[in-house]
Amino acid sequence: MNDQTPTGDEHGALGDAEYAEFMQLAAEEGFDLEEVEGDIAAAGHGPLPVLAVIGRPNVGKSTLVNRIIGRREAVVEDKPGVTRDRVTYEADWNGRRFKVVDTGGWEQDVLGIDASVAMQAEFAIEAADAVVFVVDSKVGATDTDEAVVKLLRRSGKPVVLVANKVDGASGEADAAMLWSLGLGEPYPVSALHGRGTGDMLDAALEALPEAPAQTFGAALGGPRRIALIGRPNVGKSSLLNKVAGEERVVVNEMAGTTRDPVDELIELGGKTWKFVDTAGIRRRVHLQEGADYYASLRTAAAVEKAEVAVVLIDTSESISVQDQRIITMAVEAGRALVIAYNKWDTLDEERRFYLEREIERDLVQVPWAMRVNVSARTGRHMEKLVPAIETALAGWETRIPTGKLNAFLGEIVASHPHPIRGGKQPRILFGTQAGTKPPRFVLFASGFLEAGYRRFIERRLREEFGFEGTPIHISVRVREKRSKKK
Image (cartoon, rainbow, N blue to C red; front, side, top):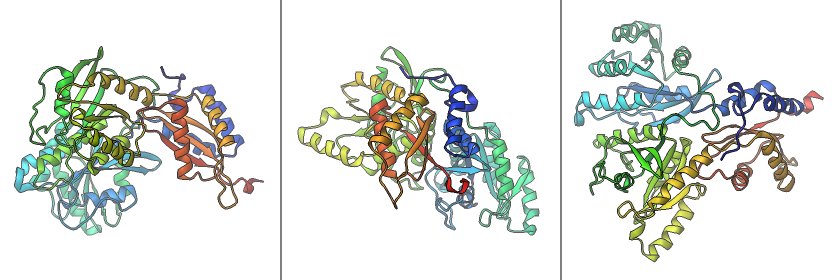
């Protein structure tokens, strides 16, 4: 089904002969070959390893996250509980890329300290490859910290212990006291001033696995994994029950019945699929709604583990900002995407007209997503769900050989050149597809390519090669000025 080429792990998508030809082309065009090699390797790897930053409220987790990613993005305020959503950022340290997850605080009085700590830490740890555990060195280890330590030990995940708020040599003794937690050496840092964060990051990288090598067209063992996601009460549990042919999940008109994902192996369309019925994501999670907060954590973890995200939208209501945010979560996670418009049987002609206008206006960023109009209640059009999922997976795994891609790029440059800006006209010199799941392309150009032109390239890629139901990642490497070499 997909056009595939034998690959060598060290070259990402490229076989040895193709890789040699590609590097020769890069040399002829004056690119730094080490940088080209790095670009292909970075794009050709699978999902980046995940580092979760956990700890009690107000120990400086978000400040440390900002220090790790090198910019002020995580919200920081001098009171506990500011971070409520699980937020993921991409980071780079010493040439290695990874994801950093900033986790929120919790309201101790609502669920009780033990339950709160358990849920917060368990879900953050579950989605991570390694954990940075932040403790306030000035306060020392508390009962809450001890509760987290027990969870960390049970998880078996590698842990880097951080003694934060060590602003000078005088605080080193406070940091040393944290040896008592039994997690090994505490790294004394000042997230606010950057002191000691380099050593801490070195240790974190040692704990993280390397990004997995790209394997083209080779699915992971077992059934394909599908995450059902959407706002509360859009019908995720009803849909799962309908495709399963039996009542496997509690369905209730009260929103938020589902708290934990329910993994179900379901025979559908002659195949076995693993469906994950996830708790709905609410618009704004307040601290007193602790269970919903943890449900949203769990949903994000389910998306990370899935291959396809099926987003349910309630067609009887207007498409909301929350619907758009959930779709963005799936796209940013790089998952194949199917949008299932539920309760379609309840629509009259007027509502259908306005719904189509809403889709054109509010979901303009994902016109490539597979679409099915269904009714979880009556089973209408359920037979269309599997073909949509299979098409999205096929697009997600599609691979274009470098020769065919460059012939296509040559035609584009000839027929639709980049607009002239400042007296110069940048052009695409050559490119390669360095990864799949989702498809990832690296283009090498003579100058900066504007965002509009990149979108045009993506649109033409889809027209020419399909890529239905999958996001596409395009990165551009600009050649250094060659005049200096003349």
